[in-house]
Amino acid sequence: MAYEPSELMFAGAILFPVDTLKDVISKSQKSNPKKGEGFEALDAFLDKILGSMKNIYMGEKLGTNSDADVIAFKNKVTIAKPKSGKPLTDSEMKSNMAVYSDIIRGISAAVCVREDVLIGAHKKATPTVYMTGNKWHPDIEPFNIKLNGQKFAYNSTDIMLGFGKSYYGISLKKKDTPDAPDPTLINKTFQNALAGPNFKQLLKDVTAAKTAAFAGIVLDAVNAGVISWKDVCMKEGVKAKTQKKFSDWANSPEGLAELIECKYIDKTLFGKEKYVNTKGWSGSGFSKYTGSDYLIPNEKDLGKIESGLSEKKVLKNPKSMRAYVNGRLKEKDMSKNAVFNSYAANMSKYASVLGNSLISIILKTELNDRLKAVRITDDAKIGKGKALTDVYDFYFFLVTGTGSVSITKKTEINPRTKAKSVVENANVSYSKGTSTSLKTILCGLTRIENDLKKKGGYFIELDAGKAKERNAAKIFLKLKRGTKSQSVDILEMEFRFKGDFMADPQFQAVLSKDFKVVLSSDMAAMYKKECKGY
Image 1 (cartoon, rainbow, N blue to C red):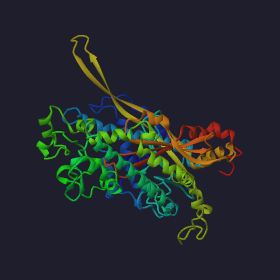
Image 2 (cartoon, rainbow, N blue to C red):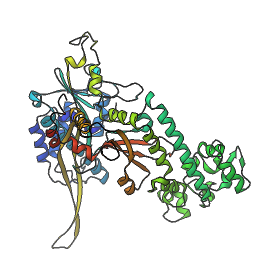
Image 3 (cartoon, rainbow, N blue to C red):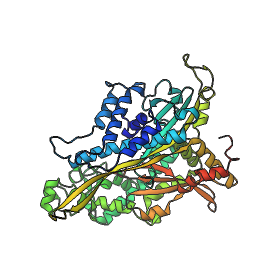
Image 4 (spheres, rainbow, N blue to C red):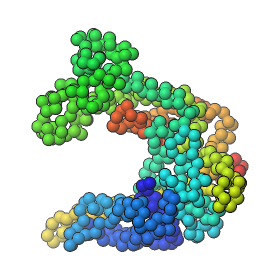
């Protein structure tokens, strides 16, 4: 299991007292990154983290210098140093800044956990640190909850901290600054996010609607001349002799299916791509270099066609099929955006089951109940036969480490010689991390339910604000609770199409601004009664 550098930085940092962590930050001031100067505190702390690997359980065993994961991690965080007086290259500086940024984020999250998450004597105690992944250590394997049909663990803990019979599950996120967008709570393909028997019909309906929408886009592209109707095969080696015959075929169920499935596509013209993923366009003039108008030549040949032309420019050329499809996906009038409607209509249709499931999958609202159902079966464990939660305390937290190291450049003029020189400094941005407990999330959902007097359920609608601002092939939706006239936003969701348009889009979600206000400590104080029991 390859771990994120920031996860291992946190796992190492949490073994040190808060004062030590804050001291590292205070000593990390402006520096000269080209000369590799000014990072002594971060370099020294990185050595301490690397030394602490032997005390961290990585999967099923303690990390050792011979362990593949430890070796891979050390290779990832190698700091380049100037040689023979030569300054670091831009590439080496960029690599160093990435490593230092992950150290800062790891410290940020560790300070947050020490000060805001751990309770009582745990605040100053040294935890047993477990990295999760494909395999969990036997000590914590009972907490590794999986739901039927899902391909990923329901308990999304990245690092587990153990204190005797108490465990803290940390789901770790990171960002550069406090004002940066929140990290996603889920980032999976739509099919994987909703795997399981409850979603079979939804996924089937979405796929059918999406396929029909893209078939319509391909047909529109042919009608617009982006792809020539003369180049489309209706059967193996058979093309329409007239545009009317093509139109009659293309508007039939058989024709629309072929425009997407491309069983008979002329590969001498389109290569391995399907019509919807075609990058060139009819009449592009590429055929003299590739034998086809639709296949983009290599960079060398592109230069012959037009000075300075690159593949990137070709893909953005308004004549290209790639630009045409992207333009349709970016259509701001959602009534005309067929692909958006294929998702929105079906998600709204299944909103009640989908809403509760998304809340459970993304916010882990069933985790405590699932853990209560686990029985201890290992003879070596204390309390064999008892419920896991009757013997062990488990606290789940979303924690975000915040910080980065960035390079700033400033042109200075020598007052005597008037010569200009560029001075580079590295600025350390640090803020203590933030945390949200599962208890707080459950309490927040209860507050909303009580405020709405239990009226309405979950429903899904377009995020109109983001839809107007978008400049990429994305779909933005909101999961809301309540009624159309009175509701609270819970999740902001995004579908992103990249590469193959027919591939399953990436599905991401973050807490909405409304819900984050509900979860704030000021609101919590007003709702002590509703939160009783959490």
